Length: 148
Image (cartoon, rainbow, N blue to C red; front, side):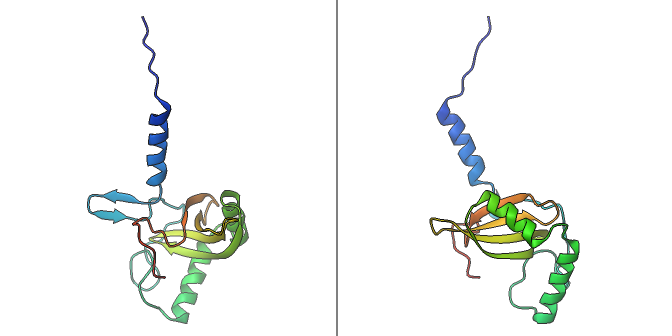
């Protein structure tokens, strides 16, 4: 005799919901590790001796220009391709597209305003053009808005 197991719709929705909620941030104990994605292009130094990611404060125009040039030389797709991929996931008006080092991941950040007026940040892999993450602008996964 064979036994058939059925998973209820509520259980499937709960599992999918948990997966979507945790898509952008990995929490390990008290520490939060961001981002939860990994791009195809990794960098270990942002050009000023610090290990990956954004710095607090300003580097000055020369440092920012050098970092932008370094990231551009690593990218395999251009801003237009990244923008097209982002709009394919989140339709709306593009406000800004920028190539960035996000904690060692080289990504394009595309800000989009939807028809409902919401602003989303879409992270696009600078190597493959794949959309890695979508979140509301200012939502860094900890429930607090960014001060940038």
